[in-house]
Length: 91
Image (tube, rainbow, N blue to C red; front, side, top):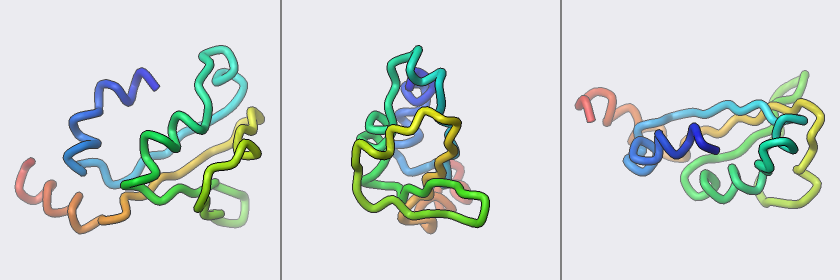
């Protein structure tokens, strides 16, 4: 979560189109939970769990998502046109 603190302005401006995170045992050590990422991102980003055969959309938070066995998540901005416009305009 410390990494996200540095990018908070960019997240708030809608400059970041997609985010991929790896979640696992190290999150136990850092006391970082999927809920932390969900609370930060779910309003502006659609959340997905990356599976071997595709993406599984996460529409609601549940404690079952707190799986500390190396899991990858993908967050895609809900308004990709906004992120593209910001890139074109240099903002």
